[in-house]
Amino acid sequence: MPLPPAAAISVRDTLDLLDKSFPDFAEGVANGRYAFWLGSGISLGVVPGLWGVVETVVEFLRASRNTADATCKFNRALGEALQLAGLNAAQIAALDLAIPLNTWPQLTREAIIGALLQKYARLLAIRVGTEPFDYLVWNVVKVPETYAAAALQPDVEHLCLAALSLEGIAIDMVSANWDPLVERAVTILTHGNVALAPTVVAKPDEVQLPRNRARIIKFHGCAAKAAANEADYRPWLVARHAQIVGWCADLPNQPFMTALVALINEKPTFMLGLSAQDGNIQHVFQTAAKQIAWDINATPPGYVFSENELGLDQKTLLENVYGNQITPANYDAVCDAAKIQAFAKPLLTALLLDVLARKLVALIGLMPGPLPSHERQPLIDGIGRLRNDLASAATTSVAFIVGLFERWARASQLLRAGEVTVPDVKYLPISAEAIPGMAGNQDQAALGLREAAIALGLLGAGVARGDWTLDAEPAATGAGVLAVTSARLGASRTKVYLTANAYFAMLLIGHGELDESEAPILIQAKPLMPSMSRSPLGSFGRTGVPLTREISIASMMDTCGTFDELYADFRRELAI
Image (tube, rainbow, N blue to C red):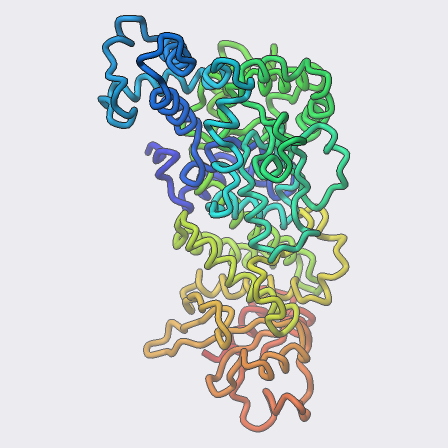
């Protein structure tokens, strides 16, 4: 059965595609192996892509021309642009230039814009009288106003990249985009925590800036920085043909070249929304390949593209970087193996869910106790079930992603602190490290992360066995982390809470997060506290009638030697 188009594929189908056809890539992403190369395709719908840039320039020149002046600089520039699109004198004369571009016949308009898309750098290099060389970029496209406007909000792609950067996954990003949408997404998720903001490199000397958790090399410049400081950053907005052709040989750009070549050689490349049509991009990859070429059979794969079909420029890049490893006999297979047929929205959403699931699986493996590794497989399968069910419910919308993140942040704070201490933080990572570094995190034991992963694996196993169903709770005070409903006829829906220890359990009560009268289920990571007065926060748990069902994951993991024993204990304690 053929795959859906890259723009229409669901999150769940994208996960299936990763599982079946790109498992080494997905594992490599979760291990923090990849550098993320970002193009205009990830920001379409928020800021103008190349199509919008071309339309803006052509319409400006048309509207600015003085038909009575034979020497009009705008008239001459428009004629040059139309010739660049492949029109001859007769075809140009046949155009009705008195009416706006958007009212031209559709076929004519789309043919002209489409032709100029592949020559956008030449279009932006057209001279307009004695205006500055970057006149069309700065004064017509209006990069700061268009690409760094305060009203611009991140889309799904930017939010997922921000979350992946906080998880220690997308810590090396390279962007050909002017917009600051990834940076704004991190600001939103972290409530402006500057220590977690990515380091933005927008001109060559900034490669020496101290690195935060993540770094974005914006080798074509940054609209936000240019808006704040025109003198320093306007010269580094790259778009014109002369800039792109001379970019790699231009001595001031050598720090960029050095950093990008090193990154290509150190990490496999994952391209999202990037056509790779610019000559400087092609040259950087060729330079890197001449130093250290990635093996065509490398694990994880050296080059991966998020595309419906690879374009000529992307295929050219593969041909050049693989050199004599690629032949007419394997050319098609190499190109197919480098293409994930899913665009950035579903692909990044799927990758984020997969990373979270893989981190939970890693935590299950790190949990001490007599349960051998083969007996933990049903727990791992339970995490997989939760991942897949969430992916089936997922949509590639900002509303879904924001709702997911807010619930995740709330659940993380209840687990780690027993209360929501920073309500404006919209995302908390499982860990700041990619999976290989998680074993060295000494905070996992205190935070209850390993036990929480065990609990989620057990809940997922119960869903897989048909013993209960799970559904989401709102991100609001008094809501559970999730809710469980037994498969028994007439069973009621029960809130479930996860927290690290007995003190945090008391805080849940004291701050109105848990209402014992609702008979919720409270899963604690550590051993339960013996019955005692919980003043000043009030009585709790096993004092009087035990309305709240308390479960200790650590206690069960200390005694259970098989999954069946563990699951039976867990199900008995749930009492649903």
